[in-house]
Length: 479
Ligand code: ADP
Image (tube, rainbow, N blue to C red; front, top):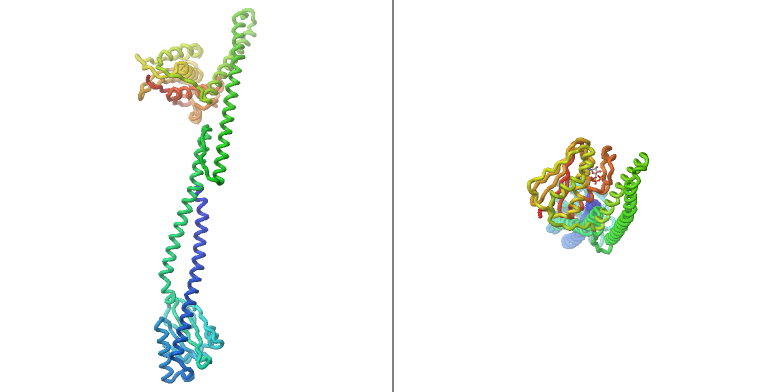
């Protein structure tokens, strides 16, 4: 999962939970506030209308015509401002007035709110579920029941119950509540978008920069710089990574210096050894035993190999220090090829390998450094000879392609296994196959050849099949 999602999902879940929680409590608080508001308004209305319409005689004889009129006027006065149903009790807890005439005369003193109103003149309100035992005609949800005591001549004469459907009480606020809900949803989405944008700027963008930087360092670019200046952990990480890259660069320089110096210093003794060997061969060979001569041949071979290795290491060190000097000028490619084929002929003949140069009538001159071009060709041709069985053929040929001259060296040799092909131009790569491992080599030739060809603004590639031969090609610009 992407880092940004890992960081944001818990936050978003938390915010949503918080909103649901806060929303639930806000709804409860709002309901209670509204009920209380309704309660106080009703209390005031009941007391006002009771004072205006009801007297102690109405409670003493509720069935008298005057009382009925007063109760009706009182109820109407209250009902004017509400859809609530009004019921009036006497001090004994008997219903003395209701628009539901069937319940007049019933006693229901046991109701908690009613009891409080009659016994201690305490007004109160209660929320009743719709399945309450209270008689009703509707089935519209919860009810809000408000009980208010009515006093006459300083005594509790009875109580009034105002019974409203809660939906009707909440109706005036419903629009505002819905708007608040929309506001909360939009607000949450905005908050999530802001969190996303902040995480993008603060974490994801710097992380991408770090990834790009690490990839650059991984591929050997120790000059890469990470530019995160924020004064936080990211900024500190950036500074540490920059110091690490500088350290790696220094190490690389030290290693290059060491390889350069070591190979340079090794060159002199190798030359001396080879020189003395040549002298011994020239002057003393006649009086040496057969055995000693065989030893000398082996020493000479080892000396040659050591010499090549030292030369290759020097080239690698130069290449890595950016000091692989080439100076390109128009070059006669076919002459160079003929010269190299001539040099490699002896080796090829030893394995009865034929080297054919398919030389066109005219080969355009190419832009190259002649000595470096010779190095590349010598490496490709010697590899072709080295990694081919006896009695096979090697062919060198050209093609003209997009303003370049492509030179190919095709052999019918061991080929390179598909799984190794990605590493062929890497430093010190040598195939793991037995036939190749047995051949002398350093694994540096193709690395150097690639550096040289690219320095000459060219390209080098190959195609190969295990057991089916290999063709190495390089393209150089026409002069
Ligand atoms: P070296 O020949 O000294 O080992 P190179 O860099 O020239 O080093 O070649 C690297 C490796 O590529 C060789 O060890 C060999 O495995 C493989 N290779 C190069 N040229 C050929 C070829 N013509 N045929 C088969 N394998 C080759």
